[in-house]
Amino acid sequence: MAGKSATAVKHSYAAHRWELWACGIRGHLTYRPTDRPDLWEGLCSPTAHGEAWRCLRCGNYILGKPRGEGEASAAPTPLRGMTLRDAFIMRFFAIERFLRAALLALAAYGVWRFAGARDSLQQAFAHYLPLTEQAAALFGIDLHDSLPVRLARQLLFLHHNTLLLAMSGVLLLAFLELLEGIGLWSLRRWGEYVAVVITSLLVPYEIYDLIEKVTVLRVGTFVVNLLLIAWLVFTKRLFGVRGGGAAYAAEHEGAAILRVERSAN
Image 1 (spheres, rainbow, N blue to C red):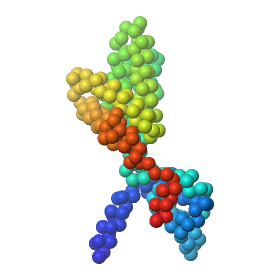
Image 2: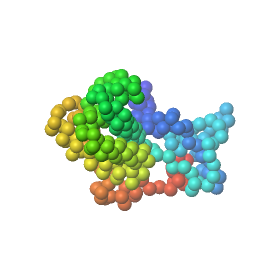
Image 3: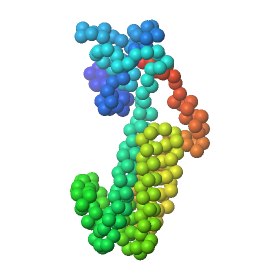
Image 4: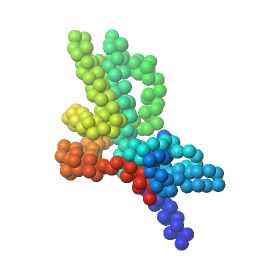
């Protein structure tokens, strides 16, 4: 019996770990539907220390007054389960895109700032990003083989008349990376389309990179981006895949009042 009980607890935690992480970061989400007292019994529980309200995200009972109150139809609808997991994954990639955009912008500025010296790349990063190489080394990343640094290195050998045009291209790439990051972070459907389109536009350059030289970082970046494209298209049903937007909306639809009622049961 003890073994079965431990297994049940383990499975229960595994099923709700995304909700628990979200509540740990953002706090529990308790709510009192003022127009539906019949739901209170399932949402509120009296204890020796006072009332405890059930979190709409993780389902745990939290001591104290509810975080919000109002009509049941206006109750918040927090992300849960697989949808919440997808949000964690998308925002992880969004942070990575923000960092790439920042590095591209700094690389372009560094080349412009130290264009007169052949060692401008090292000077720029030593001056503006003193901890970048050390931080990257901790994760086993060769910063000099990363896309921003390689683009900056290539800019150094351009003729001065074409340097400005090339740097504008790098800044455009930084803007696209930033736009992709915003799209992923927003968790909106338009953002998912933006992320897929921009990542797909970078695939030909990554293939060219691999033809030029095969490294662990380049192969890893290429594979991760392909997996990201496939994952977004398949799980978010983009471009009509698996029924498209209508099927995705039907899969995730549900009014706030239904979320409250499910929590109350």
